[in-house]
Length: 115
Length: 111
Image (cartoon, rainbow over all chains, first blue to last red; front, top):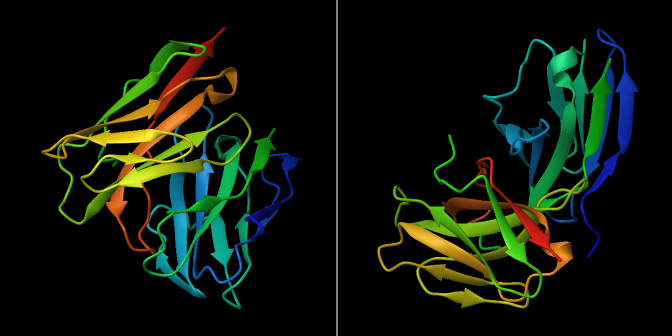
């Protein structure tokens, strides 16, 4: 089974610019998550989708971050405008239907550097 | 907040067993213990999970205490490639529940 695909792998932008990340989950996985991982810390959940609906976005800085999963498959995460503190790895994960027993499958992430 | 407590770092000699502890004293009856690891520049990778019985797979063994308030991940013969950050997480078994990560344990395997 193909894994979770993310692109781009790396991105460098200047502060106040905008950036978008893309994620394609494992086929058939209804739940999709975006995490932010700052260097030296564990991943922090930003948003959780169930199909194309948002389940939890309580940790998403909504003044600058947005995410969508229009057709319940792939997803995009956008930052506009970016700040220096947004420099991090952005991880996408997906999980299978109820009863699946391997927790999440993560992509390799997008490393964002804001200068 | 994460519901688990782990030491920030540990060392292990190559070829020896690595025993990584985790405290989860507030675990609920429907929550499982999951372990993931994250090698540099990669996303976290699933290792093993369990409810109350000890579990073993090709990667590791998981020992859960009888009161379920703590567990130990055992890598029986650590190699240099096992150097990574290991995360212990508690969450319900069924899909769709969010996973809250703590800071994990950074394991250094030394030659």
